[in-house]
Image (tube, rainbow, N blue to C red; front, top):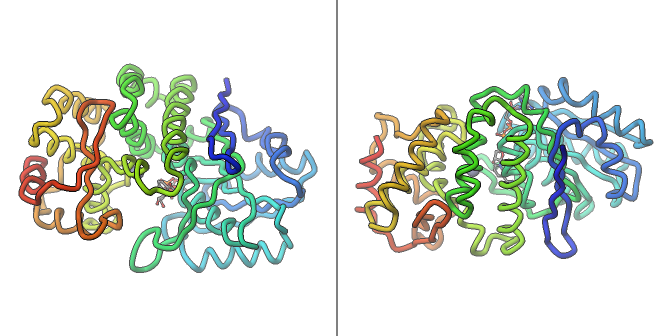
Length: 362
Ligand SMILES: NC(=O)c1ccc[n+]([C@@H]2O[C@H](COP(=O)([O-])OP(=O)(O)OC[C@H]3O[C@@H](n4cnc5c(N)ncnc54)[C@H](O)[C@@H]3O)[C@@H](O)[C@H]2O)c1
Ligand SMILES: [Zn+2]
């Protein structure tokens, strides 16, 4: 079973293919999207061991001249050092403007390789083959690429759309369940911000999803990508609408920063953040208690955390929220739900309300 979606961005439009057993046919999938037979595949140590052989084989079988580069596992690889290594490799293997870079891995690889492709020769084509649920439903769609600066995450980056995204759900079979749950939050988030039927589908198929049932996975991943593609199509460079994707993230980013990015997966911090944002919306009289409990119940069933750690104070979390780079002109912009399937952007919520809502979420 395979679904093909289209991310409509004028000249930058591209197809996104979701299905099973796609990696062994990736060579054929790539042919219509490249003018040159040279490709460089970027991956990390885990992905290299498990998925590189099949991808390499498929590309070589249809005549591609393939080079590979592996970076260390983890967020630390979104660095100047790894970025430079990739540039050196691109130069060494003489990739030209028509050559293709392939990001094979999670969101770290997608962001790093995407940024490398964005600036080498002022931009060469690249393909995303995301292998984590987080990357499949979020990072691989939208063309945001970046590396980190010691002073902050994703500070150095570019918008650069891929030519093709290939999502093979078979790769999720090796992903730890904790990462499946954490990635699922971005799907649930999408349901809350604009797609009530998707939210309901996750409610109804949660066990099948967590058991990695192919049909259930393809359904929710493709629907999450449809939503993200629609948002990106309306706001490619994040000037307005795209901000709604930040639901739960202002609280979540603050929590991640305060816990030094070690205690929570990103999705877990966002889950807690969504609970805080929903509580705040209830307190402001804009979100019903019933919908609040509905979101809470799904997060709990998915075994995602919803409460803040006891060693944190509301004041510390609120202060950290102001340091998130999504803050504009010193004013917090919060994405708050009005019902499951709709959110609004609010920049007029006072700190007292925010502190009260946070205090209710321990
Ligand atoms: N560009 C965007 O729009 C966007 C959106 C959201 C997140 N991101 C970025 O994505 C990154 C997080 O992505 P991530 O969670 O995928 O992290 P990641 O790439 O570090 O992957 C997490 C871990 O999973 C391993 N892994 C990858 N595929 C696997 C598989 N199939 N089976 C088992 N293990 C596998 C990796 O080796 C790594 O250890 C962050 O850097 C974040 O900033 C970008
Ligand atoms: Zn996120």
